[in-house]
Image (tube, rainbow, N blue to C red):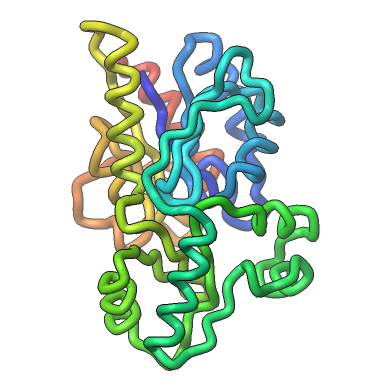
Length: 260
């Protein structure tokens, strides 16, 4: 079994980013040598801190499927094989500027904002904002209010990029990047190292940004918010965890381990 998981609102609570309720289950997965692979919009710097806290040494996917990092040896920080699916950060910043020019909008991205400004906009702590600014592949920018989502996506596509549109921030990513593509590559990576052994893949996510990942795995699981599952994931017949955040994550993974 391989566990692919989103972080914010899934393994981490949406409001306080706590993962405490999931720790016993993470330890059980470690004991059974079941990989727990984050697939997130967060940066490598942000994910490394979390993996160190959880004592995990599994691969991870960052910046909305832009790159997969596979630890080498005992996982000494910075020693990885990088499988790149997206573009470089410089290319993303140049793309953001070109999109702004075409739209006639001054698009302000993380590269234009100070850590203090990001704290004010997101509620992150200062050191967390600094890690969020340490980008390698993608550029989040303030979603323009005077441009329709359709117009923004069309412009991005013309320039060869993809965009994940959010209420406050949108993420500009390389045209060949994506959570689904990264997960498919990792599944093949594990298959090549396990021979003929059957691999069961599980995906846990809470928003439409996780859709490609959830469509790729054998067992997609929706982690609901406090008000229920995201409407963008409903109507697909997928199982829904009995609770939100890390508590729901732990309960549903426990159920899967019992089942299989």
